[in-house]
Image (cartoon, rainbow, N blue to C red; front, side, top):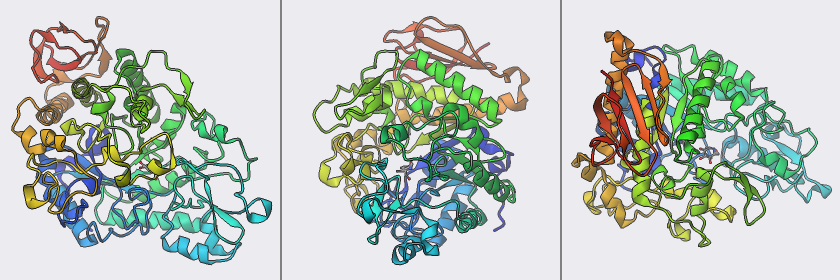
Length: 577
Ligand code: NOJ
């Protein structure tokens, strides 16, 4: 499909310093009026995305799916779920986004299909040993087939094996509705390359690759103890399931597909790997970019952020890619709530939870603990959380690299932590006693403070309710309220993205004085200060104001403004004279 490329997306490697907005389509905007967000809903909000000033959107899966895992269980990789729209509506959305200069990244889920995918239906109907079973990972069960082949547990809890009913079992590292594919089978490889071409031909600009580190497995290795398997990152590629060297062959051949397009298609890996191996996924010969989740694990401490930034910039230099910054996403508790939790004393330690399983003591861990339904919740200070989240947003937007922002975080939306158990949809919720799951960050967005806007009892999300219940306090966070408030989180976000764009444009040539690499500036205790040319970013992690370095204040994350210094728990952008 030929198209006129918006100058913004025609820049070579536009994604290196892009601001990418993650849309979780079922919870963004509902144009069909059935309580479920959809593709025309995205099209109807291009004005909003344009006002945010983002360079691209990444859409979580919108493919046909029974939603056993929020759409990460795909029935057909080359179609749109009829409840979410049609291919024609997808094309209209892409055209509308492109004409606004906004790129489109789609989610690719290659580790597993859904159990309703035609291949899996065929595999289950076939006999052991049939070619149809070779597309998945079927193995004979133990004890004459009545027990799973080994004791591996799925990441969502419960056995990683489900019986096929004839003595064989199939592997699913996630839910039973998500059977793992066999990437040793050339047919699987060819088919996914066709999927890449299918969406690239429709004009998509890039792909987010789900579980990118999981595709190649060695099931012949001696079975290991479950707790061994849970320690994901290994520095040497020796894990039987994760991050084996063979995955790079797959991505090298995908690179050949990406490079057939002009501009070449972009890809970002979701890969939970040892930091020393992230560069392989972000190499220009493979996917080109990889998520670095370290910032979404960092606690509100200057040392944590300093370490995260140094490591990420070093990794990026090693891979030749640009680094990525993420504070939140559809898998983690909302950042505005996470930063309202008590800090965990340094240094980080491993601790045993009540069920005896090891867990890291970090901010993400505590946030998940907070979501426990057993009443042992730590206190959350919502105002402080929102304030720190705003400050952290200005840090990530000032750093070199690509920033990913999850829908609703631009509103400072808190986690909906008290969804009643009967409405929960996430497969993690039912299967793991430890967590209520990830639904609390997936509640449909509030567009209007009027609950009945559009007549839908959904704060303007759609005409007929919302698929997860929105609390009354969503009104305070609605887009229309925040748009009218010069001190709101949304207004700060819009200003920050616009300022960032003009500062980067300036630094890229018009004003050589403004150009310059990243460097830390020594600061008093509790403060982090870095600059990029004349653009300075100063964050005060303490609970009291600190003196401000010289320079013109461009932006301050604190709703009350910068005053004479850098206010408590906030970030100030300055232009040095
Ligand atoms: C990572 C996705 O972000 C998550 O939502 C999903 O549950 C798993 N991969 C399995 O596809």
